Length: 424
Ligand code: AMP
Ligand code: GLY
Image 1 (cartoon, protein in one colour):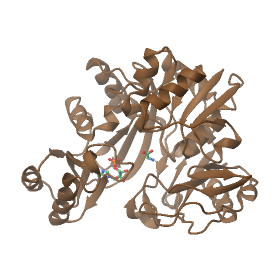
Image 2: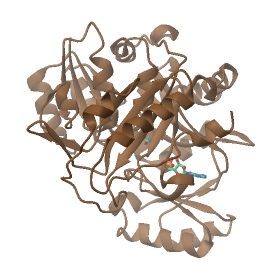
Image 3: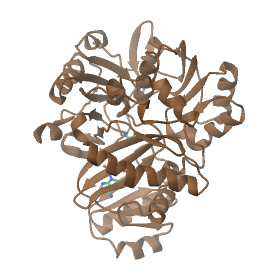
Image 4: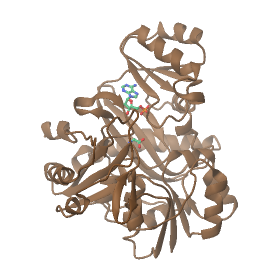
């Protein structure tokens, strides 16, 4: 079968890599793809901000399945458009994707369905902000309602700071219309967990869990990013907790969405904080995580295409996934300056040697390929991802690969998985 993947990041490289392992997949297209995906799939141009551009490509290729990587096409309604044209597509509809595209929708939904989430207030003016702030103690989390590519959440240490960030977001200067509505939220302490399930609108099957590292610098310092590294182990989520999360979070969400006439098919990504009060939902994403997908695909032993088709065809079942007991880890290398401004076009050396490290696959994100050489083209450039019999082995292998790769201004965190390793 022919598969079309929309996207061009590390997540899409990992999805393409995994899809190609399926004996049922004969051809993979990726739009727009990146320098590394070009080696494994036919890359074609598409503007992911334009439904028209994506629909035209899907109409031309008529794939047997379309897989949408990033949130923007989903929230624009690519699934609705392709369904209308009878082109099989994996993912939620535009209305279902509101769980990610509007944080105020997600918070109100969680409250309506009694699913644990931190206390919050929704504000659209500075008057409302000032009133709401009196009900919070510091630190206070300020979130833009709309999509902000990982940059819409600021943890503020004082009410003055919170008020300043709110004013900037509401003015539209910081994030444009995404900041015209805000969610103020209670700050929670704990370990974060990316808990993903596959759903067909009714049934729910969990994937193995992963942990992201959102901040730019070691020790969780500096601004939030799209994610600087991730790991996945069998030990991070025991059966009892997994069942609790399925029964108290994933099933109530999927059931609640159906009840509200918003059937949710695809991957539901629950961003959780494991607190002393129990697990709480910080956010939903309507798609696979990036960089979590890179280590998660490395542990998947079953055929990805079968699981995606089960969701599209309404027959998700427990047998859809088989997983390795191995651990895996991904270390992201980013351009100097990211998540702020950065320069592109830097030559990347050492990729071939890095790819030869045992258990390693280097997934590309912001890269381009010219005459067999690779250059940086984005903030997150690539993710050295490794599998090993335990987390230490996987982490060591990923860093061994990172050390062979170089480009001007390269930045990476040195502590991916370190907290989990210290606690074992
Ligand atoms: P979100 O996009 O809502 O997941 O927020 C991005 C990141 O901000 C999360 O992954 C957390 O690291 C942090 N964050 C969000 N909400 C909270 C909260 N209520 N308490 C502590 N940290 C938070
Ligand atoms: N790694 C977080 C995300 O994909 O949104």
